[in-house]
Image (cartoon, rainbow, N blue to C red; front, side, top):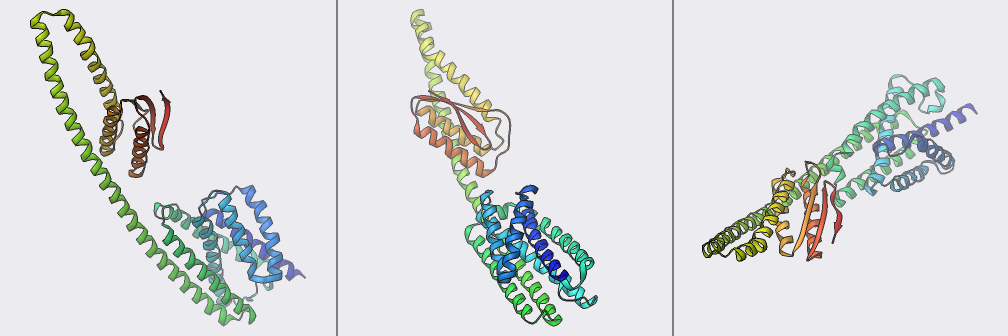
Length: 366
């Protein structure tokens, strides 16, 4: 009877371990209170299922964790890969401990037969090793390479994990049919370690592929920005030529009115031509001062081109930037697309916008 109670406690502890270490891999998305309640739910149903259907109870635990992670806003990739990775880690670490205790300490292969003290030490070692591995992997999952992993590579990694986990539990089930003999435990330990190494190799290959894809995408974005930069330089050059032409015309007109002594025409010309020009120059100065807050020169030039396009559509565009900030190429592209879309949608109007690293916020429009 005592052994049965101990066996149930062992199952409950293992289920809680799966929930807690999955939470670590998922960047601690669950609160401690939620984990305790959710873990109790998993432990209760999972233990009942384990007694009735054996290792198939893991399917329920896995699906429950996937659903919980999805509800919390995690992607399907993270929601599936984190519990699978946790199960894989716990199995491999537990088998490493089993091989050590059986081979060197000559303990019983069934944990419930070794007493409370041994199981306490066993699970302290298991939790410590699993926690260390989970924290290490959690840092890996937070890298850009894994956050931006493409669908094909993500599916490949998930399939590899599923195949390995299912295969491992098939071997564990076969092992249980023979009442966990030492020889099979050692064999499975070596086999599972081999599986883990293979998974690491697959992960490294996928990581390398995804890194190359990210670099290729970055080069594509830089190429697009370079094209926009060249276009903006051409636009600025045309604006300078136009300004030079207008400046010469203004000087010629002023010279003519002064020579004729036509004060009335001179005042009218000044009011209709010089004053608006002064306003435009002031606006341009404000525009340049605003753009100076952007450190990305290519993005700054592209925005200048969009200002010119807005002017051609008679849009009085005011772009406010509260402070200097750095932006990634992806953020620059997003903001450029947002601003271009706004300009295309409007004409003969006034737009007042606020530029932030996350995008463009419309403050007012007339």
